[in-house]
Amino acid sequence: MITNKTLKDTLDGIKKISKVDLFVYDLNGKIVANTTGEDDKISDAVIKFAKSKKSDDEQSSLCFYKLATGQILVAKGKDAKMVGEMTAFQIENLSNSESSDENEFLKKLISNDILPVDLKNQTKELGVEVKGKKCVFIIESEHEKNGIVIEALKNALVEDSDLISDVDDKNIVLVKELVDTKDLAEASEIAYAMVDMLNTEIMQNARVSYSSIISNIKETASAYNEARIALDVGKIFRTEEQVVSYKEIGIEKLIYQMPLNRCKEYLDEVFGGEVPEVFDNETAVTVEKMFENNLNISEAARQLFIHRNTLVYRVDKIKKNTGFDLREFEDAMMFRVVMMMKKYIEYMEDVEK
Image 1 (tube, one colour):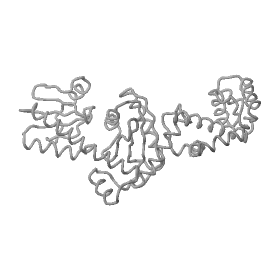
Image 2 (cartoon, rainbow, N blue to C red):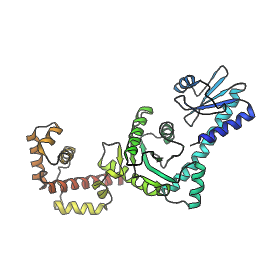
Image 3 (spheres, helix red, strand yellow):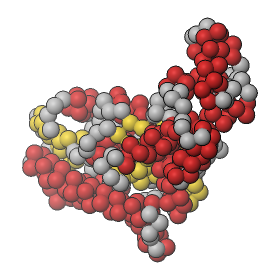
Image 4 (cartoon, helix red, strand yellow):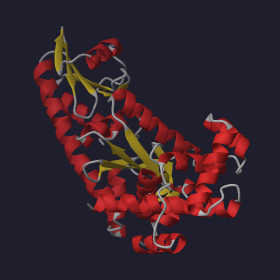
């Protein structure tokens, strides 16, 4: 991401040669950098152009350009068209160069493959603080082109002090500086904001996971591993949730980190080699509601919108087929673990196909 200072220096350098005033706005008409030191009061025109399907436009002495950075460039004065085109080209080249530097730096950070001297130099060049509370997010989107998702995130939620890069075809990593560092409430708000923004702005469903808070950018690799685990665990055990925090996954994380063969052996030990066919979605929902309500049959039935006797019938059926009585805490906990193990095994076997 081009810093505002770099953008301002670029515009000033071009104006010095061309004598043409230049302005860069965000998509909401807010000025980002210019060569005059003051707002030229053309925000409404910028917003109107941003919403249009045009990639460039000429209005009187003003020329408008949509940049690949997700911003709007405006050139004003004599030779505005030629200078505007040249400036747009220069900014996009600069953006590609800086994005490449940022991508390489972030990939080295998450793989823990960077020397201390390089860390010091590159954080300084990119305007990123080494110390300070940060959180690592992984954004998995349905979109085939990460660039569109990254630009949408940059425009809405990413600051100059943050790092963002795509690590593969679907996953984007964001190392974000936090303001309120008392707990993970701010990180949670950011994650849900990303999901909502991507859904409304570019009509894409996304899943977001995030790590614990770190106090030094050197800890990025471990935080990335946490976010990676949270993302995978969410896809296995929390399929209905679009946001997953590493701190909130407990027993699922333990099962995820167990060897697959050990899980299979454990199920064989519990059921004598034949796992009962009772692990459907209805059973899973029933077990979760029982836990949410401290194994209270009446309250769980109310939240499931079924008659108490219907839930009693389900619980009795599970006991008959598995030997586990969901009204007893130890049995209920064991059955929940067994269900998770079976789900984990099925997911991993499906991935390996």
